[in-house]
Image (cartoon, rainbow, N blue to C red; front, side):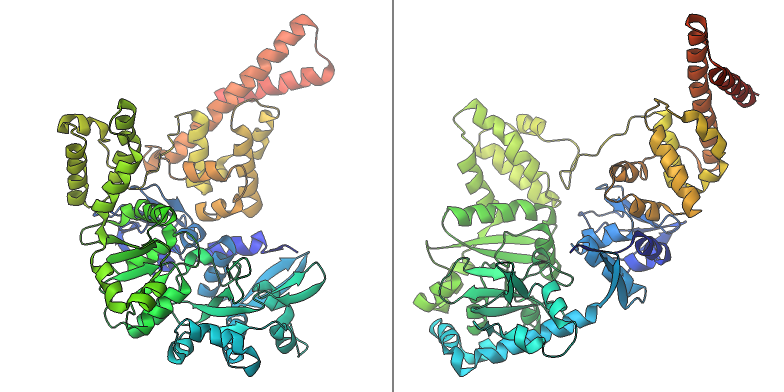
Length: 581
């Protein structure tokens, strides 16, 4: 059954959070006048363009257009889903228990209970590996040339065929069974009996940077499909937010000169066993921006290790494209490709660690791999192929913040394709873009200006007489329904900030409009905002009244009016005279 947190709780959470204090945990904010400034964490820049407005509980970056409230920041910065962001925010504000609703019944989940339970399950799996009845699993690891000290260091375990965690962790009359379901450690089989999700699999605990187990990877020992599975996303785990071996790397590496990115759990274990500790792997999925951000936060130099087949090239190309915005001064990205059907584990077992290091030392720099792949994608012998440069190469090069690297790539591209500098320059956008986002331009109109002023200055709702809103009944003015809806919610909540407003309209048809208008530059000085707002509102009232009066007068001439319509005409005329005075 679907679980959710009440909007009232979320709205209160946003209201009590000091957004400046919260964001300052992640980035260095400096106060200037009434705002706080910082280098934007969402794109690379040299001058601060990221501002935080404490009064409105809102942040905005003039460089990349990222904006929102404190929940949006958590979701974007840490790559958390909405529910996990709420939990993080609740913990920041001292809430240990979060009210989770389920079919209108409240459940209180303490996040520490999840950590305690999953770590206990991890200990059980590890102990279970050494159970004499599970010799097949232990022998599998030994046959892969893994030593006992590495198995113990990573706490590798085994989930046997007998659903042990259900039997062991559900002995007491507590909520463990429900918690195991939430963590995705048990699942229902054929809609009947429960079973261990990782049944009959080698278990690889996935830890956060603090060393707490947050999830598991499971490998089939009999090659059943799928060969590898991971814990499903839940309260404490998200596959796209984690890298395997990150905690262990920090534990053993005194200084991380560079990080090797591999594709498998066993590859990490084998490299660790041979003294190469600066290695992590994805969790069986394609690399994503969040994981790349984690990599570059931990080292300026990344070496990606891929198979030499087509799928390996595709994975490397994807990595390159996603990494370009991180290529600041001093940052490097390299690619090493292994022989076909080989991985780091098999290479080391066959040829030794020295051979692997030799391949590692010959890793291709980003620039070489970039042009190698580009030449495979562009047909230089046709005009159509050369046209693709504008589509493929130039936008990618423009993502690089390092001016020297960007210039050298463009220069080399021109020489390789024998394109004169002036022609290549014409293909390059004059405006340097860090993140390929197109800003949506909002056309100027009275209605949009009125709504944007109200969103950015919620206190203005108090100057609108509720009786005046009645004249807009069945109005065809575009946006008037949204404006009235805003006034209704402001009245209902007495006063809410821009940050709370974003939360109130999250997942509604108005969410995008609110976010856009909340950052729209109205070009109106602060001392004139109230006057302009009132003036626009009453001009709209006049416009609407004139339309309604004209329609009623026309109808009276053509077919006459009944008593109700005459009263309306009198009322509209009276209101128009009052406004015009």
